[in-house]
Every structure is written in structure tokens, then in C-alpha cells.
Length: 409
Image (cartoon, rainbow, N blue to C red; front, side, top):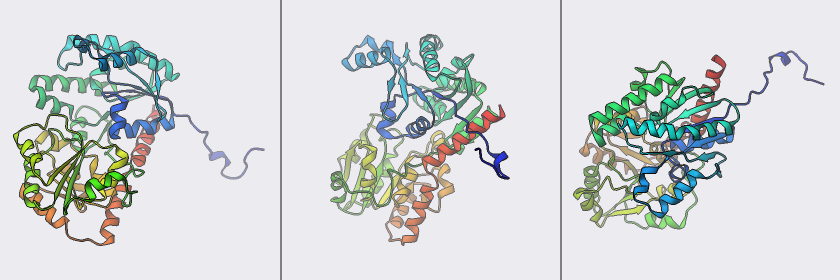
């Protein structure tokens, strides 16, 4: 017998969410190694619905200098779809040459990519949510069967292009982004700075701020053998956890190393070569500076637990601070730690918990203040702020937004 009673008529049937096909800028192995925002969102989508990730294409032009690793990647691109432990399926397309501002190369790239997109859509089995990270692929959305399309903007790609290649390339990237925004139903941005720039070219821009995986980051993690790498260093121990690249403000770190010459400056993360230079070599040659290299996400909370102050020492170039909303902010706070940052306007909503400083002198002063003992209530406030910004909450927001758009459509 069916349910009876005064509320029986208000019950709604369960609606199965449509599959999701993602057009990515990276490989799943890269995302998994760092548990970045794309990993966090896509792994949750995979627990909710069939999810297919079109990875960063393999560049055929790279075979001009063949190596064993490239041949392995090529076999992966030519092989069958791969089911990943997180539940999603990955496909590696082909491309000719992923060179920005080369229109001919991108016409060829899209022609090569299209059969892999069709393959993914067939595998999905129903009109899908097209979740796009790579704005250079926007023409491929034309005519693709879909429930709706979303652009998840996690970086200032225009600013990155301008810094690396100059104004001409930046203008080309800006055009690709405008073309993508013209084709999607909604834009999700990870910071207010990114959202503001997109509102001029799209009517529906929503915030999807970077969050924290509270299953990994907590104030009392299990101690691991690698803890000794930090625990046994002289105190105070001030540290940064994240990629070591062009974003790092080396003079700020030099000032910290000078101020705490009897303590320890701990840097946990892989260096990609873009930070190389005389200042970096001087810094890392100091006896109180300790490079721990890249560590898997499962180890990071245990290492953070032995830091006295956690640092966000990023450059304050205008393009970067406008867009930046560092992932590590809530990861540090989830561990109950004091956090000191260079000038990042997108962190100001949490300025009661994160010291956002204007200059190097202010950064050093804030670190001195952060070393003062605090009560359990302060630590609890840090942890609560992080838990209120979990990746589970971010995913729930994205899922609700997509469902609302589907109903409206």
C-alpha cells in the first residue's frame, strides 16, 4: 500500500542527475597527487553520477623528441577508457600542439579532440553536464548534446598568459574565455576577483570558493614517521606547504629566515623550476631553511601539526592578488594553526583568523604576533571556519546550482 496522509501529495520523485563530462586542462594523475580543487569537485561528482574526464590532450608534436614516458602517454591516449579508483572514467584525447595564440594549431587540436569528445558523450549515455576547465575548447560545445554547460574558472588564465608570453597571447586567451562564456549556462569562480572579471561577459556568475577536505585536515592528525622531519627541527618552526613556483615571494621568506635564524623555516612542496634564481639559491642554502619536497596529501596535516605558524608568502603582483584564493588557507585553519599571508584581498573576509599583511615588515611583525600563545577558543574558531568551508559544502552548492538550472531550463 502506498503512503497516505496529509503530506503524501507533496512528495517528489527522486530525479537522477545527468552524467558529467569534463573538458580538463590536466591529467587525473596530476590532480590526484595534489588533491587540488579539480580533484575535489570531480571525485565528488563521480560519487554522485557517471563522470567522464577528458584529460589534457597528448601533444603529437612532442614526439619530435621521443622518450619512453611520451610513448607510454601516447599508448594511454590510444587505449580504452580507464576506470579510476575514485569512480570516474578518464579518456586521454590527442592534440597537435597546445600552443596559445596559434589559431592554426588550435583548429587542428579541436579537430583531433572532437572524436574523443563524441566518444565520451556516447559513454555517458545521456545528455550530460559539460563541465569545462579548458576555455580553448569552447567551439566543441556547439552542437554537443548536453543538459547544460558550466565553466569552472580556477585560475586567472589571462594574467598567467600575460606574465608568461606577453600582451598578444593574453588578448588571445581573453578571446577564448569570452567565447566560452558565450556558450555556457553558468560560470563558477573560485574568488571574488575572478568572479568580478567574468560578470562583465556572463549574466550568471557564481562563487565556488576553494575549500578544505576535512577528512584529511584536522587539528589532531595521526603522527606519521615523516613527522620527525618537522618535529625535531629547532623552534619556532614557521612553514609553507604548497607548490614552490613563481608565486612565492622569496624576499619575504628571506626576511623570515633572518628574523628566526635560530629557528626553522620549513618549505613543503615540489619546485617546478620557475622559482629558480640567485635569491632562491641564497635562501635554500641557509642552515635554518629546510626543503622537504613534495609530500602526498595524506601526510600534510601531520606535518602542519608541528608548525608554529603557517605561511602564505605569495607575490603581490596585481593580476595574481586579484584572482588568488589559496587552497591552503582553510587547510591550515582546519589544523587549528595561526596563518600569516601577504596581501590577498580575497582573504579579507577571514581577516579575524588570517593575518593579511601589506608588506614584508608587516609580514614579519604578524609572524611575531602569531607565535604568542592562544586559548582553546581561538583554535576552535579556526577549525570551525575551515569546517564551514569544506569541499563537501562546495560540492553541495555546485550540485544545487546545476539542479536549479536544469529545472529552470
